[in-house]
Every structure is written in C-alpha cells, then in structure tokens.
Length: 289
Image 1 (cartoon, rainbow, N blue to C red):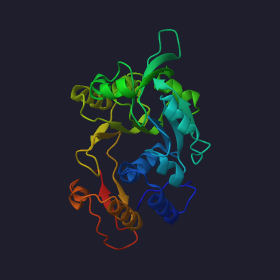
Image 2 (image 1 turned 90 degrees about the horizontal axis):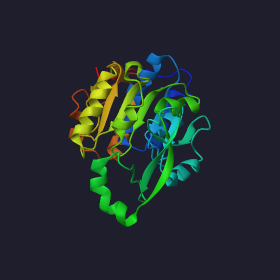
Image 3 (image 1 turned 90 degrees about the vertical axis):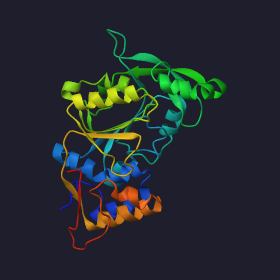
Image 4 (image 1 turned 180 degrees about the vertical axis):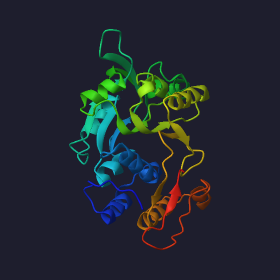
C-alpha cells in the first residue's frame, strides 16, 4: 500500500492531479514517496527547511506545501531574492520566510553579520565561504555584483525562532559552496532532519566529500539519485525506507517525467525503477530498499 499522510488537505486523486500541475523540478516529484515515508515514520505532518529558497516558487518544497499540506521555513540570505520571496503570495501562511544567512555567530551572541556577493539572477554567495564558487564566478561578480551585509545565525536558532522547534522532516540545502559551514552549526550527534538534499556541484570535490562525511557521521545514509544518476544533488536519509508508489502515482510520475523529456535510460538506470503500469489498485514500484 502506498503511504499517504492522513491529514492531507486533498484526496489522493487530487494530490496526484496537484503534483502534475504544480511540480517545478524532477527532484521534487521523484522524492515524494521518500519524504512522505519519512514524515509517516516521524508520526506527524511533514515539515521542511529550505536554505537558498530564492523566490519561493522555483522551489524544492513548493509541491510538498501545495499538494500535501506541509509547512516549514524558507531561508534566503540575498536581500533581492528575499524581496521576491516576500511577494510569493501563493506560499502558505504557515510557512515562515526568513531573511538570514547561516553562520556560527561570535561567541556570546545569537546572531551575527555576513557579507554577501550579489550579482543579479540566481547567483549570490557568502564572501569567503565558497572559494571554488568565487573562482568560477569571480569575473561575473566583479562586473555585475555588489555586496551587502546580511544577518546570520546558527540553523537551529533560525528554525526555533520561526516556530518549528529544532528541525524538520526535510532539509534542502543549496548555498553555492557554503554547505559545510551550514552543517557545522547543526549538532551531528542529534541531527534534526530525516531527509537531506544537498547541492554538490563538483566545483570543490574535497568540500563535497567533507559534507557527505558529515551527513554520514550524523547517521544518514546516502541514496543514488532517483532520476539522474550523476545529479549534482546528493540525497541522504536516516533510514533506507521501504516504500511504494501506487498505480495512480506511477501514471502521474510517468506522465510528468515524459513531459520533462528525460531520456528513458535515466528512468530505468536507477535499477529499481519501472514505470510500466502492471494494473491493480496497489500495483507498485519498490523504491530505495
């Protein structure tokens, strides 16, 4: 049987129709079963923290909120992007939007300041925290960019101040090379997230290795990406959940991925993916076992 959150605002059919209508990325649509399984295991409605939330619409968490009733914290350091985030009228009132970077504040202080490079578009980074990104985008920053001082705090403090305790079901982390610095503000011995999707674009392979090692130290296990085997996004979860999609979800996923024009070989290369419908109400695809 497919796992559904009992207090979702929509019927199961409406959820599927919503996913087809609202999905923004192949990450969000292919992680749904894993994320809902994690929320069910936690015993509560799912919640998320998205760092690098941009405008809140082109978002890893949009479908979770719109179609499954999740809520959480959208964190954006770039003041230009945060202005767009505030204007995202379709985000739930239960989801908090926070203008902040993530850092270890000076000793004795709960907050600090961090210098951000702003260059228009989606590109921005914290000065000195993503050296490989500085090297790659340095000319662009010098020609088009300015800097701004932005507030920063440790991640648990930001989440707590937003009213979501110390953690959430899902952490989406996309901070242009500063991922390691974010995780250093979170206690690895009591890691407060069940599923983590973290950008690892290969510009600094040693940093990517250290980030992966930190998440394993926190007790998470790494999954092969369920759509693109060589994705720049690394996926981790606390448990290798055994979960399924039902026939209706299979049809929705197949239709959406076909619209994305992903090569068929990528859909089956994961090894346990079979989008052929076999009939029956509970016809299912084993995932991430």
